[in-house]
Amino acid sequence: MIGKIRGMEEEKDPERRIGVSKRNRILLLLSGEHPSLPYSEVYAVLEGEGVEFVELERCDQVLVVEGDERIGRHLERRAAYVMEGGALILQSKPSVGELLQACSRADWSFLKGQSFGVRISRVKEYWREISSSEVERLVGGAIKDLTDSRVDLESPEVWIRGVITNCGISLYRLDFRTDRKAFVRRRPKSRPFFHPGVLEPKIARVFVNLSRVREGERFLDPFSGTGGFLIEAALLGLHTYGADLDIRMVKGAAKNLRYHGLDADLILGDARNLPFNEVDGIATDPPYGRGTSTKGESVKEILTDFMREAHGVIKEGGFMCIAAPQEVAIQEIAISSGFKLHEMHTMRVHKSLTRSIVVVERVAG
Ligand SMILES: C[S@@+](CC[C@H](N)C(=O)[O-])C[C@H]1O[C@@H](n2cnc3c(N)ncnc32)[C@H](O)[C@@H]1O
Image (cartoon, rainbow, N blue to C red):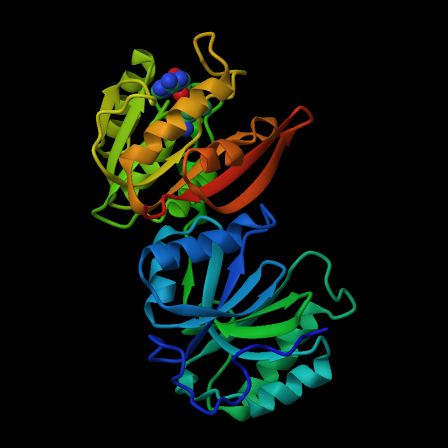
């Protein structure tokens, strides 16, 4: 059932939330590829970009936030796990009757006579008894009766989208869609230099976003391999630095970056002894001691030495997103090196590998 939604109630002082000047409520439709990373990515992008926002509601694959107008723009440009979003129009319990009542109370003035289409999607199997095509037809008819706009299902001027989730039914105006196909076009096997063990561009982008580095700031991947993270970072306009112990990787990453028309500062070097002064954030996928080279050393030893080095290289208040096999307990290594644990996710890769993904912060002192 739909819960009481924070921020939807009348407030004594509506501008009480500092920094929120325009009360835009934005519904974000998230990818179902991971249970927790999509929500964290939204937070990381908006916090990294310095956008003020508050979370109003969290449902399965849906996040409703309130904040300034830049929310959609930043997420459209950066996020890998946000599919689309737009201004929230209404929320209803999962009942067609209640939805139509909510439609009759909603403010449709934004349509301003423009043509519109309605498309309803369903997250997983929620409320299967409600037919999405019937909802599309009924909502479309209701809006037509309530406004002077006409329906156009081919190329309307405004798309009204709806999503059926565990929380009920929400309608929103489609304001942006992220380019999902661009990640597929950049798949590692399409690059001139490939090595197994490289993460797919979408998850590489999530790692980069979790480091909270913004355009013009310094981003580092100290185990840069074929350059997958460097490509995602450079595409976002970050000043991108990479290091790898293997000359074939350094040359291969340079080739891959050139192939995408991008540039990064790459060095042949050891992540445990980096020549960089101060970077704003780090995202990295170090060797796991399986497919990738560790030159005979234990992953735990390498990561323990690396963490100490990373603590000296990253700025105060900077974030690092790093992955490791779960049994390595990377979060403990990070904490004993002085980092503060910000969040932790797990990702099952196959029967014998579950990856921990941790985000840590270098706190002052
Ligand atoms: C899992 S791969 C990184 C994959 C990378 N994200 C990509 O996009 O291809 C780990 C990389 O760490 C490198 N490596 C291993 N030990 C290292 C060390 N001490 N310092 C720097 N790089 C190291 C390996 O050569 C390998 O390329």
